[in-house]
Image (cartoon, rainbow, N blue to C red; front, side, top):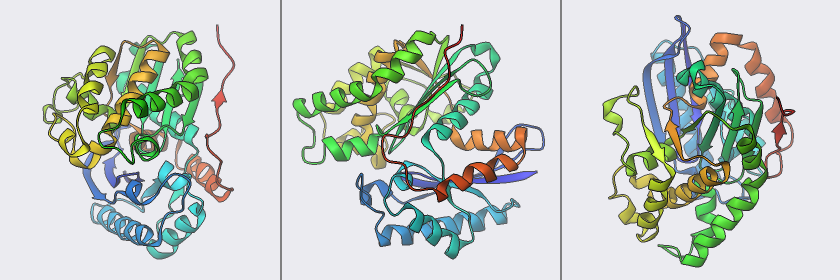
Length: 335
């Protein structure tokens, strides 16, 4: 069986086509279309018409590519950049009508659950009680659990692109006070969730997302060309040092640093501050960089639970947009 997933994020539209016959999503083709929606969509503002046009074009190409590779119509979702927009439903309706692709949004805590599942399957049961951190463009997801799915999952409006717009829009590089203000906000919004995970005492902490991958490379992790099976660690102390390097440079010059791509150089500093603050509050000295994330989590749910679960989740985007911050879902403490 061959399935495809389309992920509409803050920076790109990504397509993964994978074979699932063996019970594991094995990618046969990947592609991406760079949209930079985060440049056009400010927090709390609608997605402008020209950005919707680019999105329609990218989703159309992704659907055609999936068909050429023998996959059925793609499972397609948009993350926080669309989810939190006031005209979210209009954007989704336009994409559906013009592309035939049933694009939806997922609640932030569901994104955290799916990403946790991918991390659990990649790391295996030997990892024990597992904590997850995932920094996106519009939101930060955290989760903790001992089983296949998390006992605790939360999504907060602390994405790297969102915070860059909010705190660093007028100074490049930012001032010391702007850095402090960003840290204060992150600490305030993370306090309760971080305390819960710290109380649980995870055996292993895992980080996903391109933000963490690039920060890991900046701090000395092996490059991507070494393949997904090379272990990659990001240490909090190294990340703290890297923040000083990033903060001293304008965005254009950060792109010259190891691992920092030009499209993400502007938001790399905010991402580093969120990651470092989260690790400190949770009490994590290091995280393991996991190559699997939400797209693989969706494929795994299809493999393990069939397609019916997606139909139930995808209907939630017909409800009114959820005000930020995204709701917190906490299971009762165990033990």
